[in-house]
Amino acid sequence: MDGQHNYTVYIVSNNTRSTLYIGVTNDLRLRMWQHRNPERDTFAARYHCVHLVFYEVFREVRDAIAREKQLKGWRREKKDALIGEMNPGCEDLAASWYD
Image (cartoon, rainbow, N blue to C red; front, side):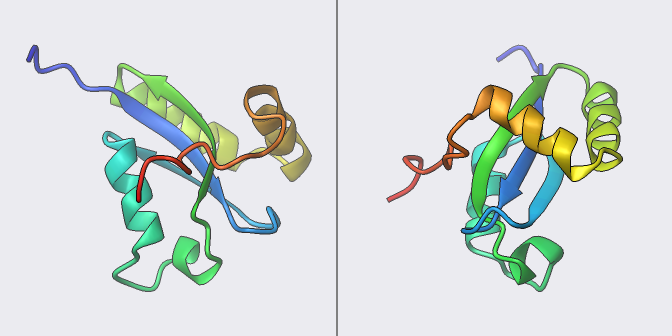
């Protein structure tokens, strides 16, 4: 292993796709498992944001954090358009990751 990391900016949503949560992680599979199995009361847990609807990968953590902040500042319509470019059906991109 070369010690390089990838950092992912991701958007998760609830069943009705009415609420979005934007985050950044260096382990998307683990982070999605944590969203689906919350151990504490968080925004994502309260609103049942467990469906991965969008993600982008970055080599540098500072770039990922900057993108996360940018997306959090966008209006909902712009976020929905971005999700639609990657995932037109707004499907759960992590649906097949777990049993």
